[in-house]
Length: 341
Ligand code: UDP
Image (tube, rainbow, N blue to C red; front, side, top):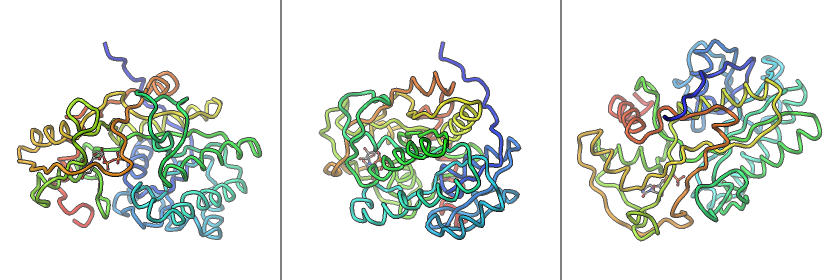
């Protein structure tokens, strides 16, 4: 029988959530808010959506690079813990603008940590990524896999992991680096979901084709060394990702040492399998066009999820492909123009 997760523990606040209006961050915010945890959101709204944040959660518009604003917010909230989602997070864009990525992701986090020191924040949960591993030497990938990122995006995330280790040595901050595989899905209510501008991710693009908003989906590469020639990824539902953040923070708050942990299901899905399931779930055709591989795209990325199970007691509940696409489809169908509705 599949392992059953223990119910999600409730961490102690106040918690400051940076990037709490974004795709994954806002989902964690809604989960914490429902659990009655005291929290506040800091977001510059460059990519996030104010309407993704519950109205009763204090919202501070502000930029990680604005040290004065950070001091103001920290003085008001006096957070005990931080969930740090705010970042620029497009691999392709990071190749074109490495300095911009360094500025926001590395320098921005440095300023956040400086502000955190002043009010003695105790715990820090960081949205890291499997992109810190670079090209996998084998699958599945566990946390001991060498970290050799091949994109500026992955490099910035790895630098922050190292910064956190240094911060722990200097001031005792305890941290969890959660290395996401492919975040996907939507709030099961259909009220919240993925809305990136521009959209580059496979699942929302596929569903936009199902909705008739795009003519066809380009399949990037069909001669990879995989079961059908298309890339394999490990898709994780944002509900499961959010749940893992609550678990990681609670674990740190129980006195556990700092940790790094993959967040993936251990199951890989090909691009063609995503398209086939999108057709089934939506009941619409999804025309696709085979094109050449995207530069720097590894053929397969699959997590070895055993550490998340043993350390966090985390078992993904909504990340099977059908549930994930059903949730995503509900959001896209009800909100064809995303948060602009
Ligand atoms: N992909 C694709 N067509 C698209 C977008 C993505 O074939 O229009 C493929 C991409 O090559 C990768 C997978 O879908 O193998 C997931 O891509 P996504 O951009 O969603 O996430 P990534 O794995 O790049 O972080």
